[in-house]
Image (cartoon, rainbow, N blue to C red; front, side, top):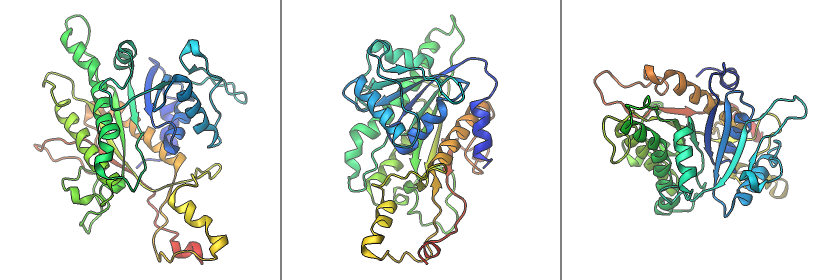
Length: 353
């Protein structure tokens, strides 16, 4: 993989032709907040619509702003009802303009995401990139508990990405057919970490549900990857072959840790919780030579944008995941990328000794 830092800079400051509006879910989470922070500095992005599970635009705005500030990032400006929670912020230190940020309450279980018809159509017709990072990190929930809001919600977001293409297809004699926006689904390496293979796990779709760990969270990600693949191959459950092929990628995210600037790590996660007990218990579990291949969350956010750039410039050339392009004559599957720290040292033993 190319250097995420260098490629991210290229993505944020590439030559401006048309400013692009983009959609982000999961901005209230750690990775989503870092992605939003990068996107709002982009010279290419005109606006970012954050779809948030919230009761109102004000609540959505407050949740996103708190998510940013809790991670040491500048928050949003005060909520303005007349602009429907939109903000255009100014960095006081550099004077660099930020993208227009709109925080909208969304109901992912609803076919149109709980948005009014006008807003739904507008997002479908103008968005050039959708990054879907919203997913409950709940390791006690069963698979079926992810079905309504998460698995169905993914399908509804993918359908949104195809709406404008189907509309343009019906009126292709009036205007050029618009390509679907790039769609990045942020999955997890947990969807394949129980694989029985003795080799490296390939950057490709898994065809055995047993490859996912027994947790409902892991299996929900495995199912979600196959939903992405179905849309990738057929353009959705009921599409026609004349529609443009969706530009979808699955990104399996590995274990993340605090960012490289401040080291802020969510204290409710397993490793920070475990380490926080050491002063009291004067002991830590013996995890042996387990590699601490954690990836700083800001580096992961940069890698996500690296993939977005690749889909943007390489879609026509069949840009795919890593080194696992399909053989000629095989049915092409959705491209898969692993966002991981390639280093396997230090180990847990190195940390505690």
